[in-house]
Length: 143
Image (tube, rainbow, N blue to C red; front, side, top):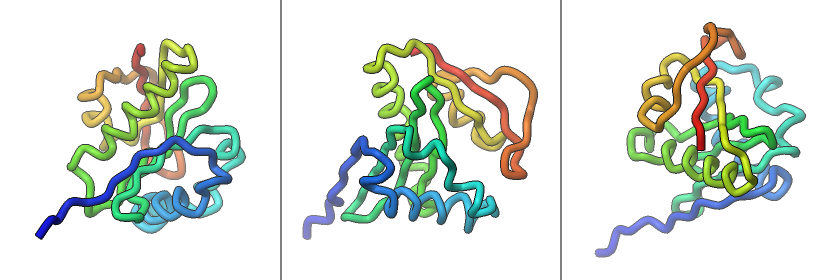
């Protein structure tokens, strides 16, 4: 029996895929990490380009890119972490930033995710800061 998974990684606007994007983000940030729902949906979403990874028509990972190169809201459903999906979302968004003529991307990484981003070539800078009650550091990468 063929057990291949139908998979697609797309770039989209928030209005086109809001429900699927928020399904992943709500599961990861609100349910798992305790981020207040009111903080998870902000005024930047409609201004960003979003990456959405689907497996068998199910949204499993997402992230967004702001116009200035800020990458954020990287989220992967727990059962699929450690399989390279987060890396695929980040590198996909980096490619979109580079195509826009940007030479640098940056993000606010949760402290527990710093090693993940370092493996992708990011370096931390500045002091720790709190965002939605979770400790973060800024990280950047030349592209």
